[in-house]
Image (cartoon, rainbow, N blue to C red; front, side, top):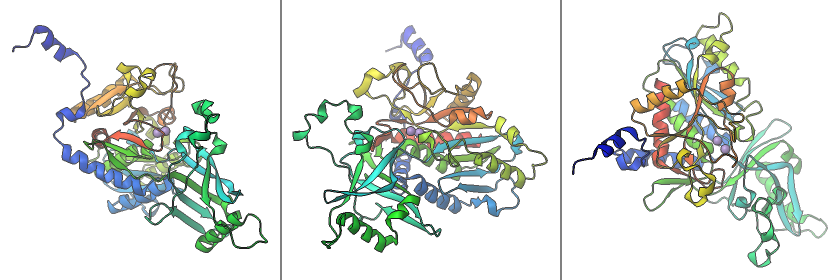
Length: 467
Ligand code: MN
Ligand code: MN
């Protein structure tokens, strides 16, 4: 049948947002890439573990610690580790730094439960850890799920003890109990937001008492005795610890068609992983290509490992110095001439919660990378709002490389909002736009992404860094 005039015109003029799998002929690569991604998530659930693994991978790919290099020339590869929780990595370009860098910036921290400085207590012959949640969580989602414990304890003598209870199959798990439905008549009348209070997020960690009638808090004592034998610590050492509880779930393929990834911490380790792979696999660079893996995004990017930190300027100074371009301070020139993809996730449209979304302006899983021109809520409050010219430039790269993408907002007006590191770097003068991956159940213990989108993100970051 011949197409009608209207059909031909519609084909030419309408913006069709198609499911990426329909036209996909690269399914094997997509599935293989997702396998690598899931394996990574299982060994790198915290910011420290992610940076540790990223450093290993960068070194294997020929990146050197910038502090151990005197001079840098085009093609050289360097990294800078920021307090084991963040990093910068660069491939030096042919063009001088003052013409700007191509940057991709993701974050490696995810919502979780942190131990408080005095976490350990006993109640009615059970021992618990007291927590304070980190980032935006729905507290009720964190009860009755298995949890791992990761982090470090620094003793007063400077000795650092690594804690990793979760990566060995013989490791125990920890859990927050919830009330049985039989006795929850009162609890169930509470709103969803305060059904479980922040102060209710207490971790059950033991129940055997130390055998001695003379001591009180015998279960707590027994736990401390176990910890003392294993790690040489006493109760006071928790004061200088950073210990995080994260879901023990393994990353798994989701669905009969295995089209999706279900895993904890995909915000924003999905962008961290894809951009890390992108900089490792760069085939050419024109401008200096730089990867930022930041910490503390989930609590406002503050502190010396967050994106607000001057450590970033310090790193640019190191690059300038070692490429012999530091005749005068050119850091601002580099900043103002640079371009950044703020690589962070966005909310995927969920038909189960359709009423909070504006269907024409949302991200859909399987429809490619998601570009957010602005974030914020309501009247774009706090957003850096990329300009038309820069959006056009990014579209150009995507279309040239046949990468599936969607330009989106996040939610109906008045439903909430969010932010990323975008505005922080836009404030410093660079062209910035948010470009990441749509996520279902974002900030939950088990987030969902599409393997197609994950691969598109990898292709995007690579193409952008090579531009
Ligand atoms: Mn994020
Ligand atoms: Mn987040």
